[in-house]
Length: 325
Image (tube, rainbow, N blue to C red; front, side, top):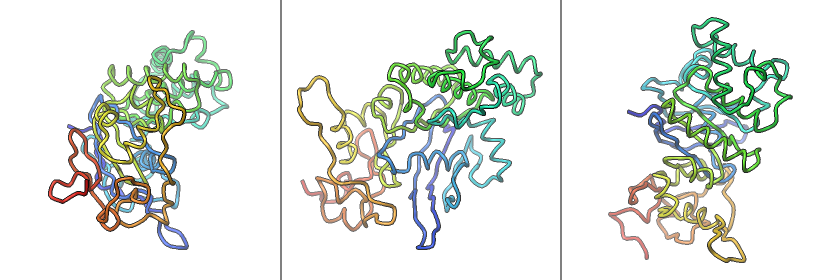
């Protein structure tokens, strides 16, 4: 049974010059205890997908069609207040910059206990005990003393741990983590990644991990969804996507990762740039940059097709068509 189901999600931004389609027919699901990585270049639609799921789309952005279901219940059509309750209670969010999630005027203890008491029927004393436990679980030393400290008294890595504790405060079923390690040192990144993995395992929570870092994906996730120009290019188990990529874009991403076992003077790169939303080409959006493009790619858009252990939106995997070698 899937904990989260995203079905044919379309997000649009109406403007004076017409409507821009930022997410185009996105579908995936996440099981309890699973970590799904969402990866792609800047502007691919990763963060927008997360924002649509947790009900934090910036106006005038809106969900134009499709559905988001949490534990079988639709949440994309809830009122602002209804969504706010779900967001704290059933969905926890972790953002790139911890300072956007923490109020500088309140101690972290107050922020944690208020969140716990808003969503769970517990006493003030029990809320404080839980808050200290969460800080300990997220690896903050001297949690009982530090609970009265303010956000500015913590380092960047420690602040991010506080944000994770805050996201877990109401024992949510789903955690949406948007670039949670980008602003941190590599050694701290590794600790935060281990923390997310452990939380997932211990609590059975599902995690949607949004990042542009394939190293983080390889280290953390069970499955990965590769996004390109507001669409899913490929989705499947991490090992298969990394070692046997089925979409030419994913192959390009993998080839661009430095390999310490090979002596190369230059990194591989994907020529060209991702198209702007108002200039997405017909057919497959990747076709102007694709080394294996053929005529059908320029006129017809591929859906996700079975490609070994993964699924890829690429006509190379259409079993019923004659594909050029």
